[in-house]
Length: 191
Image (cartoon, rainbow, N blue to C red; front, side, top):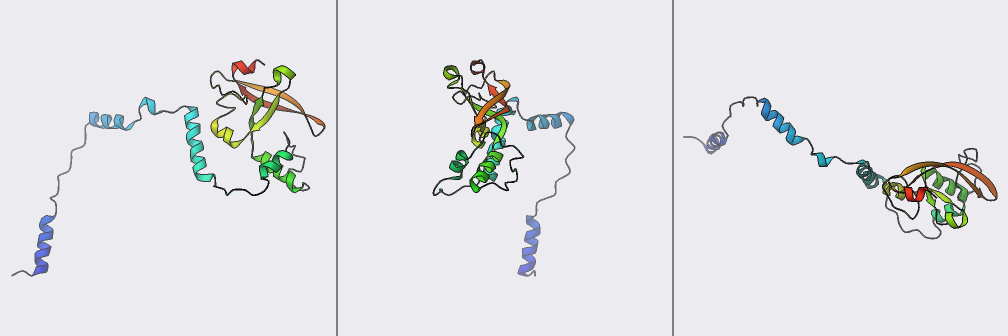
């Protein structure tokens, strides 16, 4: 007569699934059909703007910290007060010899994206003035000045042209000039 533990073992062996015979290799047509199902459709491909947005959203989700509410004047206010359009490398690029406010402005300048500029053409027709500034991170994320018109008040994204402009300006009583790249739509680019 079998004990309870022997009966449990026999029951376990009886419940085991039966072994299946090896499957024959699939034919070539079946492999090709399976591979075609795995490839993305033609609508799954993304253009440069969609790929840019996907990369930027991945960057923001990993590297942009959440900050507490500031008290007192922010570093951006201090940077605006002591900012310059172009900081030369010989102007204490390491930050030695600068006061704290100038170091904040220099640090802000170093973080700007200086490939393309944003133009303010609101006074160009009336007074012959042109205002330029570098793009911020938020504008780079939105594609402003690269995938859309670089004019501050325009958001056209079709037919953009790249211009390289010698921008002459005065800052703190001194005259300067810098070579700046702009991306403008045809309506704005003829100013």
